[in-house]
Image 1: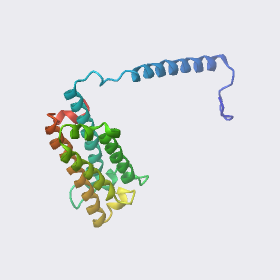
Image 2 (image 1 turned 180 degrees about the vertical axis):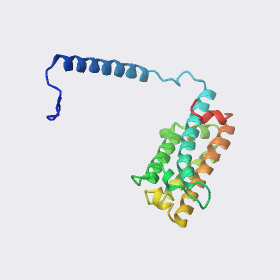
Image 3 (image 1 turned 135 degrees about the vertical axis):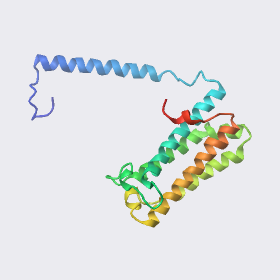
Image 4 (image 1 turned 90 degrees about the horizontal axis):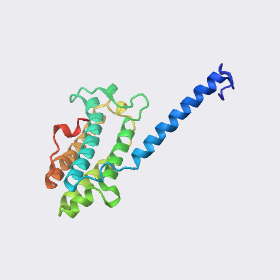
Length: 194
């Protein structure tokens, strides 16, 4: 419509009726989304079910992030840099760092997250360990933004593997320690997307 090189004639009845139908469909779908967002699907969960959902959500995000590292790391000594998430744009590591920052925010949830839940359950030491693991992982995150480039050297591979190991420790703290303390089972099916 605003493209001067367009072959669609402005003001034609066929084009106007199509545009009106598309617009009406967009409005209907937008209203459906707005209505769906007004209802909190977790508000009716009891405490244990909420804890299970929360832990599964964190666990799923952590598993997904770890796969972004494990696939390019492949077998020790035989990396597959082309399996990096954003190897063409050289932003795999910076994207992954943002994922970890988002997980940390989800864990803390402005003082109302899993950190607060663990502390309320008398598990301050575990909560501190998780906070420290997030901090250590982020503080030691490589300055380089490209996992593809990093995996071209042995030193780069070691650095990426060290970060993967830090995520493994975080996974242990959340999936094993926190879930056990809260009486929640995070199993095989908790993170398979079903």
